[in-house]
Length: 185
Image (cartoon, rainbow, N blue to C red):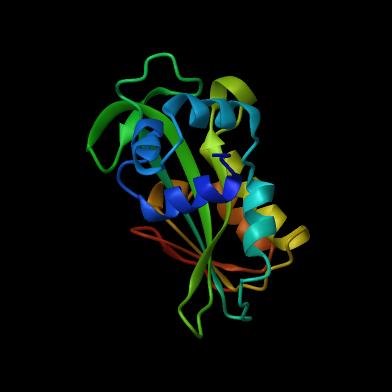
């Protein structure tokens, strides 16, 4: 049996809790852990690929929202995985070994539907970027390249840095951050 991008994406969508290669191999007949591992080593699953697959499905509205959030993908048993590092996990309420992921959602304010439209893996040792750098980069791509209409940027309080707030203001957008308030256009 051949293993495809569609197989992997469907697995990730249907298995939000256990997303290990071993678990995937146990649920696909004729596919081994090694087969999936080889596939992932050869395949590049990039933010651009996400956008190419979701672009035609996004229903835009002028009053849309952009949501930035971060999470730590638990890798506590994987000492040698690239980009795995010790970092604080809000889910665990402590420092764990994991991979940092900053995600960007587009929310249609009229229908309340939402789509993942971008993401970045937090790898300061590999790319020298902070999580704020990634958010600013994604925000610029939304406006300049993806040209998604939106009015408001929603995010956790710790994103409320002057540099990012100034960038959002310069784009003529409103921001709201938990515990930090909001801006007026």
